[in-house]
Length: 243
Image (tube, rainbow, N blue to C red):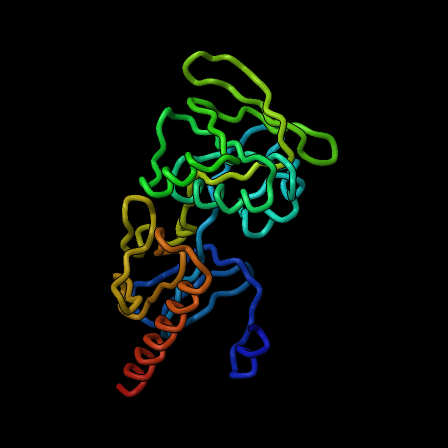
């Protein structure tokens, strides 16, 4: 993809933008060693998965701790795995994991799920899926790889241990949009507001992908939005260049 973009004249610069000025074109983006000027900007900073922030989570990242069942599920064929969460994503990923795992234990801090009725019904009928209600993960344990997780019941306070070869965390995402607070309009969760053409609240600034999409969160939808944003940015630049 990078080679294709460069073939059409795109310049790739590795830098970290720390501040933006969107008051009027040309917009300014302050990087580590220089300031970039742009007649139009596309924000495509994505979103990051929320993590548990418990002991062992980072130590076993990629060695049993994951946030992507599609990426890593096949590594745990015929092994027990655990899923944390109670929403649609947790159950969708949990159901996917039943294709590989010997057992899927869903750990949820409440006594009822937040997922839609259809997903709840499928998960509760699946013989490979079990539920640990009113429970949270306290730590991730193992040697070279994950072997178990600590569990605490939030009502009784009782501590326990669950044997598992993997921990999949699906407790939501947060958009990587802190840089644009006060510069672009956002919803209460920090997702950038955009119309159907990827226009933000600032004329000439566009957005694509998970920085504004908290629902689909798929590569294919983000790519389509990137195409829309690029076409609109090109129109904006052409229109203002002719003035």
